[in-house]
Image (tube, one colour):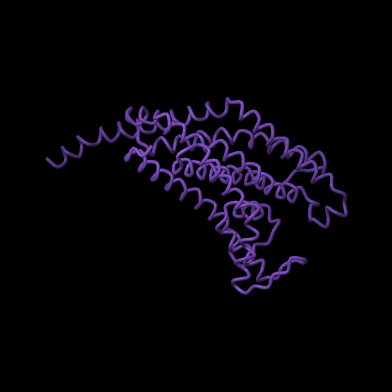
Amino acid sequence: MESAEVHSETPVQKRVAPKEFHNLLTVAAFEFRRNFFSVKMVVAAGFFLFVMLASTYGLTETNEIMMLRLKLDEPNEILSTTSPILAYVMALIVVIFGSNSITEELNSRTVDILVCKPMKPSTIITGKFLGITSALGVPVTIAIPLMILIIRDRMGYSPDALGILGFWFFSLMFMATFVLFSLLFATMSRSGGEAIISGIMLFLIYTFIWPLITLLVQAVAGVEVNLFREGSENSLTAIDTVGLANPVMNYQNAIAYVFSTKNIHGIPPWLPLVCLVAWMIGLLFLSRRLFTKRIREQDY
């Protein structure tokens, strides 16, 4: 009898798993088409490509004295130095794309149709995450080879192949992290405007306000801070340690680790890379859980 029960349940489990996977791909494909074939994608992709290509060309155009001073005399250093620019621009673009995705579904109550298919709320939010990330990943994937061509044309040879692959991979991972942030804010917000404001605030905190937060932590910890010269070993350790709480810093340090263009102080050099992965996994779990809770309670 026991073996019969086990065999009777197995076909059901096999049918459910492919169905949920099919639902996941359906939502992801819909989100990809809705975001990729849109006017805002044309504007955002054009802006992103212009900024990244112009920045790359500008870094290679710097005179020899400044290049030596800024340590930009190698193709690896040029590509690695573009990572903060990519992070700032992409984080801002992601906020615009991801913030309305959830609020539109909730306010129009079209999410009820998806749930009644039936489709799990966790499948819906994961599909949206994959679709938006894939759509925004296209401009990044196009930009990087063009940046390599500029560097090769200006300096005579290209960055290391492994470094290029790492740059692409971690750029997509960083972008995926901010997509999840935007979906999380959209899930918790009552309107698209509220979600966008929350996303912009997070962007400002992690970019322009973060140095002030780091200085405050150093002051509280009693670390000497001197704004007019290179920081001490303790100061640099504090910057990299506090930076583990910031995906932007983790992304930049991960790229620097791949290219070996920067020393990581006070922590294992691979730790920012691990933290970047942990941020993405943790945010995916949290967004799935909160979205499922809101749908079940019909709090919209």
